[in-house]
Image (cartoon, rainbow, N blue to C red; front, side, top):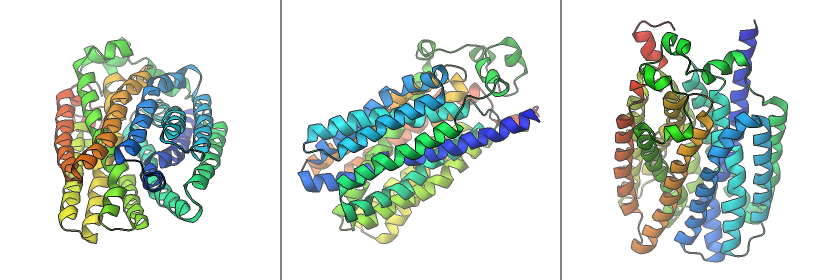
Length: 431
């Protein structure tokens, strides 16, 4: 009876993390509509405006290892509360900006620190410690919360900007988002009981290695991995490069998609709806990819998802030459599915390699690659546009990056470390 109650509460944790990520990453992806409003008011170049977002990504990713580690040291509740308070302060200050350097300080530093402490790494660290066999489903669900953030927050923010202006919109977000996240953290977040957390933290013991049907490479999984040990391995760097490229693509496209469509004479509000469709598609796709990766493996699932991402960028290129409303919908569906796989699979693949007490710190360190890729992607897309006056060269380069990202997942080869649950069943395992 105790095991059933514990398992049930794990899904409550998933629900809390789902809502938290929806709200927090609503801020992240709403930048694309704030971007247009700020360029209009201040007349900044696109590289300067996008540079703020690049710096934002770098700062939020740099604190990820510390945020992941603090989930274990001080507890998930305190980490999320502290992060949400800093996030609210940063958003409130953003409403006061008059110059580009103030925006860099208030948004790219203060808001970024808050988002990093309340965002992706702490939440996936919390959830992975509550689940083992159904980890793909759990990760898919909380990751789809980001899709809800894109779906709901981006059009809502554009609506608020149109009605009350971007300054008041920042103030509304500064109050609304932290209050909800902090309330949920106080009410529900807690550490997993020993019956769930111990197998994850003790995975290096001989008893666990021998009897665990998921394990393929016993020597690898017998290690009690630390960050220092992890960064000395080839798979860590293969994953780092793949995650770098995956987020480079995502942020290059997401940061500039509204501006791209507005350049081609679409209304900003309509363009924000296209972004919302990306969110709708990614919501279900993240759950799909998470579950599918537990059945057929991480590499195959990632490859299918990347194929959709490439299709989405091809539709953007076609739209540039042959503007059509139909192509915007084809783009949003395809790229929404492709983006989803680059969001939900990295934490699962990292856990395949480095499951254990230091998982939060190790995945947080890999998030530095993610942040660097996103920062470079957001900035370089703006720079290329400033130089060439077109986003087409960006889209072509992103297609090549997608192919390289996929290749490096196969080179890392998580299938050679652990079987996914579906493979265990096929092999006649104990599940």
